[in-house]
Length: 152
Figure 1: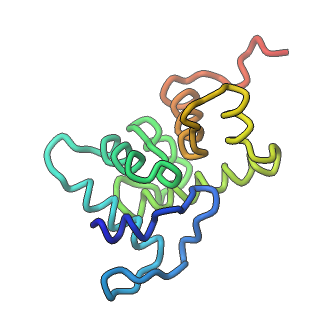
Figure 2 (figure 1 turned 60 degrees about the vertical axis):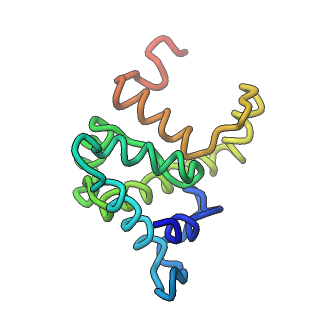
């Protein structure tokens, strides 16, 4: 699996190309296929290693690409898109949805993660994937309304 992760090295959630073909150990695969394989391999580690742990481990290994999820976030996006599921293919669909959200944010705010890292003085800086995770966690898992009802 190390060869698969190395093929994803430098990729970012906001810009990866799912149909781009890479060579891994004399085999050609699309980026989507590599993501699916990585998710599937980690997901089947064993008992009590579910979708949350799988996405967290992937995020630790490639923090700019993999957006974490938990069961409420997974359930939420399954309702929006039936192709999202606890599988490699379903997780890749989720990442593509996160890419769309990142693109929307980037159209509104130029370099949003750089801006937030500077303003909030994060060291080390957070990736867009981490900001997307935090947004999902706050709005979906915790159910916080954004903007809050008290916001003018």
